[in-house]
Amino acid sequence: MYKFEDDSLMLHTDLYQINMLQTYWQNGMDQRKAVFESYFRSIPFENGFALFAGLERILNYINNLKFTQSDLDYLRSLEIYPEEFLTYLENMEFNLTIRSMREGELCFADEPLIQVEGPLGQCQLVETAILNMLNYQTLIATKAARLKSVVDEDDSLAEFGSRRAQETAAAIWGSRAAYIGGFDSTSNVRAGKLFGIPVSGTHAHSLVQAYRDEYEAFTAYAKTHKNVVFLVDTYDTLRSGIPTAIKVAKEQGDKINFIGVRIDSGDMAYQSKRIREQLDEAGFPDARIIASNDLDEKTILNLRMQGAKINDWGVGTKLITAYDQPALGAVYKLVSIENSKGELVPTMKISSNAAKISTPGIKQVWRITRNRDGKSEGDYVALIEERPDLEESLFMFHPVHTYINKTVVDFTARPLLTEVWKDGKCVYDLPSVDEIRDYAAHNISALWDEYKRILNPEQYPVDLSQNLYDEKMRSIKDIRDKIDNHVLEIEEELLKEGE
Ligand SMILES: Nc1ncnc2c1ncn2[C@@H]1O[C@H](COP(=O)(O)OP(=O)(O)OP(=O)(O)O)[C@@H](O)[C@H]1O
Ligand SMILES: O=P(O)(O)OC[C@H]1O[C@H](OP(=O)(O)OP(=O)(O)O)[C@H](O)[C@@H]1O
Ligand SMILES: O=C(O)c1cccnc1
Image (cartoon, rainbow, N blue to C red):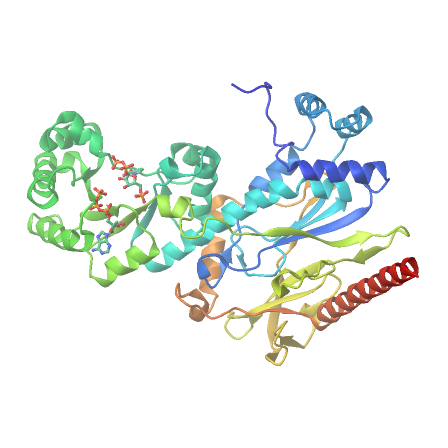
């Protein structure tokens, strides 16, 4: 099926990264030390926060970086690279240092999520894969957290998305991200196997269709399983599906654990109320009602508003494809580069579009919480050498509207970027997926309700330290002066040519 037998993620990069590496290499710049930072510019789904995910996959990728023989054969076949460059790639030893947020950390726009430091060419090569992984997983974890916020404490959320996911890797990593965001189980058995996520499942309409009769199908299923959920909407939910489910549950009695019924079509508010009445009357007050069918946080909220008697929710398409916003848009920008004298100097990109102006310099993100109750005050992005945790009071101001400011005292400043990879080795104890999920839940609980509502949340403050702000303004001025001088020079040359 594949043209080459083996397939590694080494070439899971954009061609331009390799092209730039070649330029750096031929000009002796490939080993210059560089620092790149990744961040997004707006929180997806207009949510008040995002949930960082993707680190485990990224570290696994970094751990396996090596140009294989077939990678090199393929690059050779393109006939665009000199043989010496391919030999250089073959011998390349990766020695990156990575600082990152933990999975399950709350994150916000315009703050570094992950920082990659190392030889310029190597940092460049890994951009594409890192963004690919963190963009998708962070997006899905965030969507899952939104869904979690609209269901009741006792409700459970099952992830049903594999059949609709954008291919297999998305199904698997999406399942994991959904679990981190608060889902309780996945229907994908491989995700269960790989990550230890709880798996759950009912049955499909095809079971009923195969037996051509609900009673026979439910009985056959009940006789072969202990925990039983019947899908009751194949023919007529209220007149046939539910009465048949009740009949079979009574006949099987203690032989089964009758968990409940699933509905997958129709008016689910109306139906669930009638189903609840029928189940209660039949002596099954604990039987649960599970709903699925194109659900998302808005439908669920609306169903709950209508008094739907639904206990558990199966969510597929709209979660796993991030249907209403299919891309996060995190970018990876060079923030510092070694100059010819061996000094690391801040660098930035400016633009007429204010949102596209990057912030220069290597940074740390500090989460500021009040000691009184552990509640969030905002994030404080500072130069890496700054130590706001040692300050008695902290002046926090809006990075654009600087007149919006406050002075915080009696606070805790927690650094969010931790060293996870150094000198070719993982230096971070990877938490289990359950620990990550608990960590996410804990972080969400520490956030003010105003940032958590799914409609028009308040904007969480992400502020720059005074030093970082000054550095940014200085860099913008330097670049502008340089451009002005350059334009002057060109104009003078043109004038001379005209004389
Ligand atoms: N009471 C309700 N209020 C708001 N939305 C609902 C309600 N009941 C169901 N929905 C949602 O309305 C949509 C209806 O889906 P659809 O048009 O596919 O109809 P259906 O009855 O499910 O038919 P199908 O068998 O084709 O799936 C789904 O997204 C479902 O989640
Ligand atoms: O609607 P989603 O949120 O994507 O959830 C997954 C859907 O997948 C199944 O339907 P499908 O029609 O694929 O198969 P079925 O025969 O089991 O109903 C299931 O019944 C859900 O409706
Ligand atoms: O177990 C289920 O009910 C299920 C699983 C995947 C997709 N739809 C439903």
